[in-house]
Image (cartoon, rainbow, N blue to C red; front, side):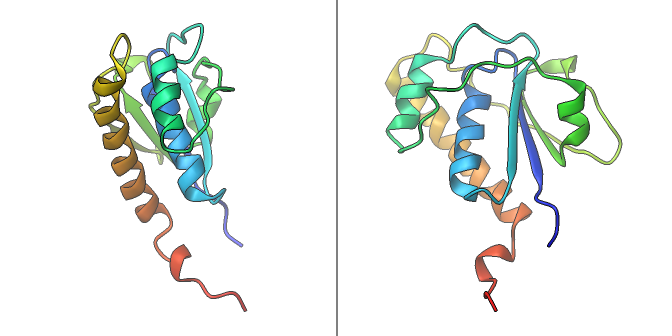
Length: 141
């Protein structure tokens, strides 16, 4: 059995975008991907609008708490997805980095955050298809 890929989602406050992305990756991967998230300046709580729009998708992120991004998290990750964290993310050779330009949901309404959530879901689905291309076709013997 091969090692599960590890994906780290990073945004400044770890309260909205990265939490939604981590929620989708956990839910859509069915445990086939190790998922972490962190922020360069973590907020005090998850954005309640992000919680609400994820609940509409059947994904519960209410128990999540913004976490400080650590160097170890980056070192342990196969893929690091940044969402506006600028130069705060340490870089290690051999780790794949992507920057997803997404609107910050802070201070936005449910109607304004839904398209951000849907954009994140699409990006997570595409990343998941890259990370686990054959998993869907595997036959148990």
